Image (cartoon, rainbow, N blue to C red; front, top):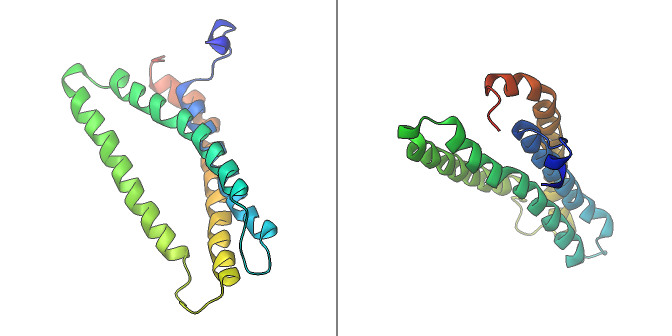
Length: 153
């Protein structure tokens, strides 16, 4: 509301881009856990708490805005279907996240915790780069998408 009153509120696509940028920062914090780990590969939970706090900010830029824009851009008769598609896309995203997480884990069950930590954090580093690129691209194409949305806010 504060930004809206000053006519400085970002459009929906920029908010999605900001959500991805927050996600990139959070994944980078997960990656940085390797620098805070002790010799056994254990890291303080405060680092994870910070990362999940940042993810929460990103989620606040995505979920409510996405739900709102689904109803605003959909024809009235298809709003329920479009909301279902939004939740279906979310479900597929959760499935893909599970596959990514399984792929980042170490196949060697006898590997040390430190080795497993490095495997996971390498994956988080790549995810942070992908999220950063997605956020920058969304922010860059936001004027074009805003025109296609016919000024729906």
